[in-house]
Amino acid sequence: MKRRDFIKAAAGGAAALCGAGSVEARPNKEPLENAVGILYDATLCVGCKACVRACKEINDLPPVTQGEEVQYDASRGVTGATYNVIKVYKNGTSEVKDREIDGFSFAKKSCMHCVDPGCVSSCPVSAMTKHPVTGIVQYNPDTCIGCRNCMVACPFNIPQYEFHDPRGQIQKCFFCNQAGVDRISQGLLPGCVDVCPTGATLFGTRKDLLAEAKRRLAAKPGETLTYPRGRVTDQVHTHEKAAPEYQQHIYGEHEVGGTQVMHIAGVPLKKLGMPELPERSYASIAEGVQHTLYKGMIAPAIALAGLAYVVKRNTSQSDQDDE
Image 1 (cartoon, rainbow, N blue to C red):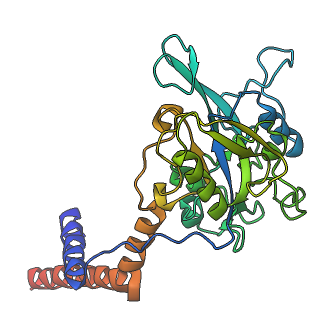
Image 2 (cartoon, rainbow, N blue to C red):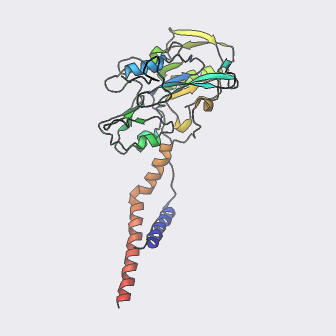
Image 3 (cartoon, rainbow, N blue to C red):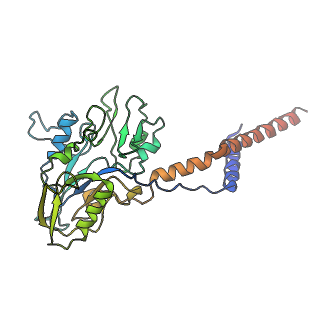
């Protein structure tokens, strides 16, 4: 078959498919009723990196060093050996914390545990799954085939593959609840939350964390607020301080269908490295298109019919030439 004929057949099939019905995306998935999450408040973060150290100790991850001496963990981004990292935003003279101009702020980067995760949707063997109760995005290395679709599908560039290891696996944050660690299942806090001295990293249900974020953003700058530490519902381990001038944006409330890790800050979240994303989840778009195209095997049937027509036409033409 000539290439031109093949293209014509494919085009004919596509045209027929378009005529058969429109391609529509499915809606975003809704948050699970008891989904758990983390609220990161950059205005409370002091950049101590205790969360980075605790994450590495609990998950048995090696430190990232500069030179031969291990003086501090020099992680600059999320890698297979770093699930959680604290970065710094600086502008101008960097005189005032939580100010965009001539100020500075800290920023956290880790898995956002999307409500409708692209990594789960794109995995062809269900190695990436979402826990049916907690909503934690899990990973099964025994099922993974190493295709790394999850890395491409994540809008936050979180899943990391161990390229240096011939038997490499995907690595990312699991809220310290993966098999063998199981902190949440035992009633404990994720390591990063447990050691945070100021409550900048707070654990709870997504519903409670979202309400807490809205409470803080509703406060007038200078107003005294009570901040819990550890669990968002903890009324014992608290401290009071004047509310800063928050940006009126809860990052993760709506982005790509919502996430279970949410951020608030005094500096625009875009400046802190959080990407601007639509409310529609990429998973909903991709799955909607796929399911429409393959519904009732319409697309393969049309393609087969087109190819059969071209073959028959060419065969008839050849018979006429022989005569």
